[in-house]
Length: 178
Image 1 (cartoon, helix red, strand yellow):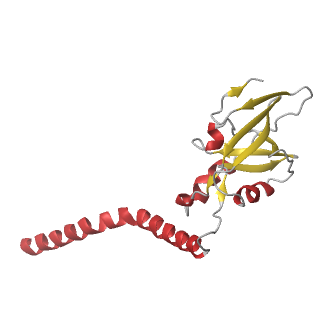
Image 2: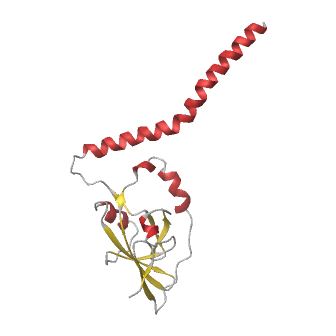
Image 3: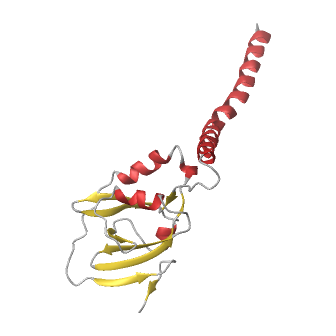
């Protein structure tokens, strides 16, 4: 009987030794599988196809203004000085009034194109330029989970006052003096 219990324990241990690493590898295998699926879709568009570009900012409508509800911390936008809570004013010297319009404007351009954002921060007008990058397919499919926590937060609207000062930031986020 002891030998039979020992044999069962040995088989159970062997099953666990094989099963636990497989369970631990599942998220990695799933992400890799999704990456392959996205790559096939992008490759099927043809060699000269334009892949989607991305500015790494989540914009949301907020009481008549468009606010940055999330700026990825290590993105070109963050390096250029844009921050969560900035109120959108212009993109490439053109005004837009709906947050839904902004992603389409960046996705239709090639990666590496410089964008010129003008935002309002407090009472200052901030001009910032940075290159857009390829859409981050490595976040697929978990991006909804990653982004929803930041998107659901609300911010107080930035008051619009007369006499706003204008400052300009270079690509590294440093203030440029005229």
